[in-house]
Length: 132
Image (cartoon, rainbow, N blue to C red; front, side, top):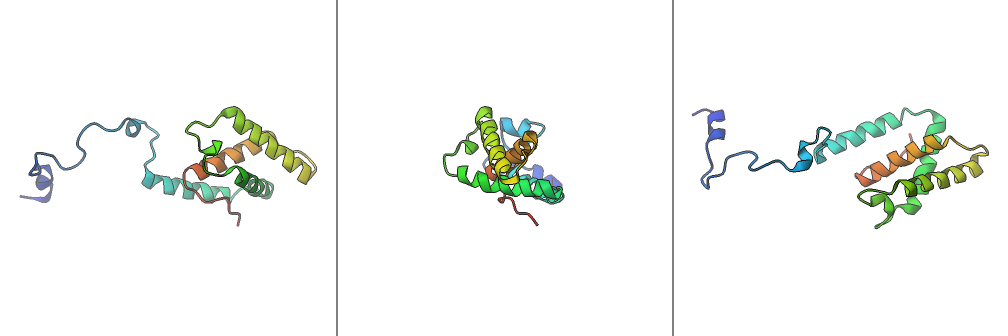
């Protein structure tokens, strides 16, 4: 009996090797990323963030530092579905802080994108923003 035919043989308790039963609903989504793939996705994301222009890197660092104040157990950034208006309000607060520090206001859409990426990384076990 060759290796592949042994895999098709039932186990002693009547189960079959491999997946038994229906797939969980989340595994059927076309964009499903398994926990093993998540580390690769975060690694890719961090690599491409290193390629940002210098101004964006500076804003990204500051956004991460400001987000540290809202990064605690029970924070709204860890809600299953964070409230859009709360995140937009947080982005406006970050824009206000950056405007005071920089003198001219940064583009609010840019700050929202940087904030949402940083929240994503924190929710999925990524490292805090590290700029090289």
